[in-house]
Length: 202
Image 1 (spheres, rainbow, N blue to C red):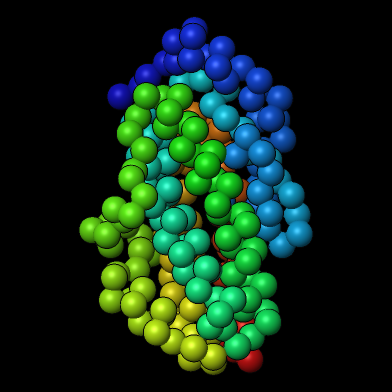
Image 2 (cartoon, helix red, strand yellow):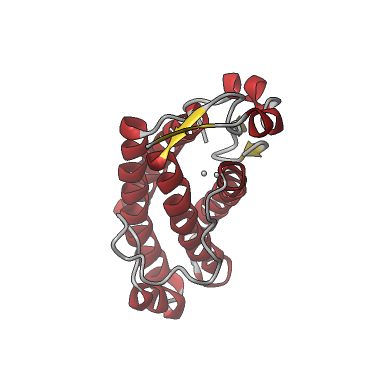
């Protein structure tokens, strides 16, 4: 199913055309900038006259939930991690993905689609890389080196799931901004996976 923005909706997002030119392979969910390893990147809102489809809507809805869990995991690190490198990585993940959540929420509003309710993320374990409630409870209970190892192992799997989801919208989606964000997610999270594997190997 392909949906074309009405002229009214297109006007709401017309200013994003310039932003779209800046979007590409760089650093999660913006209309603003996202932080990732010290590199600021921009992602666009749906462009004027853009065509979007069910794959774009599903990507935004699912990735919001996926990102929320990553942000929740990252939020545990300041009080529980032993490694300064793990704490910094967690801060980078949160700084990148929280703005991406805001961006995708805006897209869904523009498209007239439902935004997933915060706090109702359980039951989504079938999404690639999503952790179960038991996984999250175990992570929250860990501290020190045990937390670091569990966090890195879980976040690698979580990132791999996000990359899979991004590949789906790249193949099936229509909206240029959604595809640009998907490319950003793939690039950033592949780099973070490499970093996390290196930390685990130490």
